[in-house]
Structure formats: structure tokens, C-alpha cells
Amino acid sequence: MKITIALVGDSQVGKSKLLQSIKNEEAKPSYVPRTTTEFTINYSIKKGQSLEVQFYDTIGGYDYNYTRPKIYSKCKIIWLCYSITQPSTLSNIISKWKPEVDRSSSKLVVFLVGLKADLRKDPDVIQNLSYSQQEPVSPQAGIKIAHDLNAVKYIECSSVSHKGIDTLIHQSVLALSDDSSKSDKKSDKSDKGCLLM
Ligand SMILES: Nc1nc2c(ncn2[C@@H]2O[C@H](COP(=O)(O)OP(=O)(O)O)[C@@H](O)[C@H]2O)c(=O)[nH]1
Ligand SMILES: [Mg+2]
Image 1: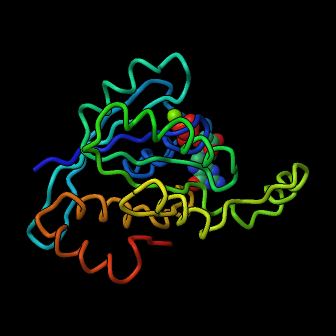
Image 2: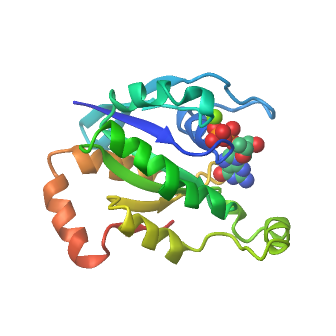
């Protein structure tokens, strides 16, 4: 079985860097891929059982409005990505990205992914946001929006500390694997599907 995942969200939220981390590439300091990229990894879900996970990066700009839906149509899972350091990127998930994904297909499994979690307590980030009476997005706000959007899970991660990334992939694989019906029933009872790293 192959699992296909597209990353969607505003520019600069950290989609490409997340994929770089997954690829385990030591990125050169200023290197960020400019084009839509795609790659596959073999993910080991448990001993003796691995499957292929294919990732599609997307570009948030207006110029790519026509190409993104073509990518969604190849995928089973969408990671709706926003930056915890920029509340407007979460608002745009609601106003722009989720509707765009929904127009493409109603069958996609959607995760809400909070990126740059390492910067939530960063003094510079907090100060810059305070100038416009804002603050970094709280876990509770992320959980609520994920719930409102009918996302399968809310997961936070950092491409710098690598926290949360394995959980994000693991939960995505679980959501489509044979065990998913069992584990979903379990998590429905316990935590409404939100995982915070
Ligand atoms: N501190 C921190 N910076 C990040 C993280 N992810 C991305 N960045 C930085 O945010 C900027 C935008 O990242 P990029 O992956 O190009 O965003 P994209 O436009 O969504 O693909 C780059 O300067 C990255 O180095 C993260 O998890 N933590
Ligand atoms: Mg990018």
C-alpha cells in the first residue's frame, strides 16, 4: 500500500522545511526548494511491516491556484499547515485552504498541522506579535479549529527540533492503514484525536 500526502498552506509557514527534515537532508542554510517537489520514503510502521509514503509539496502563491488541485487529486491525505508564530496563517486555513481542498474532493483525510512549534515561546516572536495585539497560536486554539474543520487530528511539530514529525507521519499512516478503524474508535473516546508534542 502507498500513502500519498500533500502539504498545503500559506507561503513561509514551513512546508518545504518540514519535507527537508523528513528527507533527513542537511539543508544548506539558505536552501529552500522553489519548485513543487515530490518524494517517497519507506516508513516502518511496526517490525517487519513498512509501506511507502509519498509526499507532495505545494506552493501557496496565487500563480499555483490551478496546479494545486491536480496534486490533491493524487493524494489521500492533506496536511493543512500553518505557523504557530503567525495567527493569520491559521485564519487562512479556515478561509482559503480547507475550502480549496474540499472543492477538490470530499474524501481526503485532513490533518491540521501547527508548524514552528519551537518558536512559540521565542521572545522576538512574542514581541513582534504584541505590536499588533496578537500572540502565538495556543494549542487550545489549534485543537478547536481542527475540531471545527473536521480534521482527523491536530498535531504540532518543529522542523528544527524534529519534535512531532514522526508522530505526524505515524498518525497519517495509521489513519489509512487496516488498524485505523480500531485506533480511531479508541481515540474518539479519549481525546478527540488531538496530539500535542
Ligand atoms: N524556527 C523554525 N523555523 C522554521 C521551521 N520551519 C521552517 N522554518 C523557517 O521558515 C521559513 C519558511 O520555511 P519554508 O519551508 O520555506 O516555508 P514554505 O513556504 O511553507 O515552504 C524558512 O526560513 C525556514 O527556515 C521550524 O520548524 N522552526
Ligand atoms: Mg515551500
